[in-house]
View 1: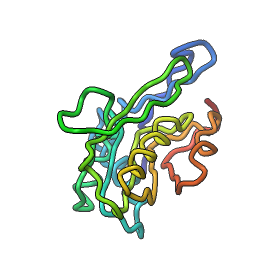
View 2: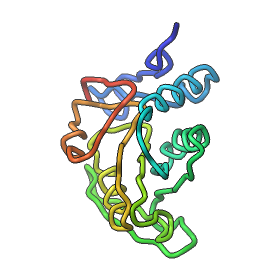
View 3: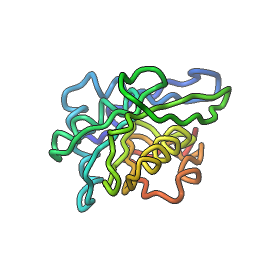
Length: 174
């Protein structure tokens, strides 16, 4: 029986020499791989009490939406600045080279709601930390963060140490 990591394509020396890029498009392009990935992420949520699933743009949408559907929960978008049509709150955070801003609708999460945050990959943890801070600013509680892939060598868990973090596949390097 195949495992999720069997569907993840590893591309050496991309985007620069010495880096192994972990490509999720190969998971998405295979019906069995996609189904397995979503099912394995759903297993990470067994026993988790939540009201809302939230995903970060854009691959967090790809994996978060089917999870919300399976669990019969609403789905909330955390998007890049300027993409949401209603009133938003935003958070700017540092990237390796520069900064980025994400936003969420002000009415997306109600005070007291328990939220699961979803993305395809945890690297440095900056995007998810900013997303969690937006959820908390709205009065929500982040009860879990889940990822398909974790690049442990980038130590994103340290940035997210106050949260319950789980990943389906963990790669020790960067």
